[in-house]
Image 1 (spheres, each protein chain N blue to C red):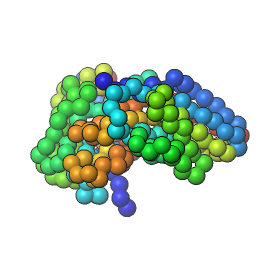
Image 2: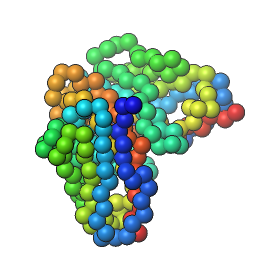
Image 3: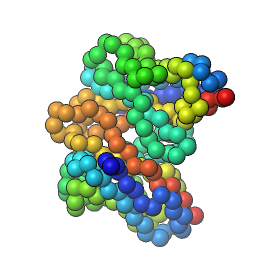
Length: 117
Length: 116
């Protein structure tokens, strides 16, 4: 089954304790991205990756890191989480934005609810 | 900068009736895509319908259709014959055709409650 898998789905942690949210897709997609969802703000892009070893900042990258060592994986790293990073996080992927096959559709994971105390 | 606005935080509709969710956007681009995503209580983001700006014909997917008014920069979603399973938060989203970031710009969301 084609899917984007995120882990963990739920996490409660404390300020300053490093954590990683993993994201894996099995569709051979080149493009992957992370969004955070907050009430009244919709979803906002944190980071994106056009392909392996190519990453760039989105609109709200502060406090986050990413890596893209393999095509299928795109982990989101919070080196020192703070309460303002309490949010619902989504990983998403699509075939490519470099070719002229851009349909715009993103395939989303099921979301990771993170609470930082 | 592009923006997307959903001015209805919450809406409700009786089962089997029709409801329209509003969305306006702002852009200076001429080539772009518009989307409606559904987020049920399971939190999964599900693509409902997609519209290319260069197409004049409004997109339709079964009970879901859009009213795309390019000059007015309006992109409303009509749900016909509402079903209990349509209860969800709905997000309107925008992406430029020339995007090299793949970024979707989302509205704030509208929570729709379908009542039996």
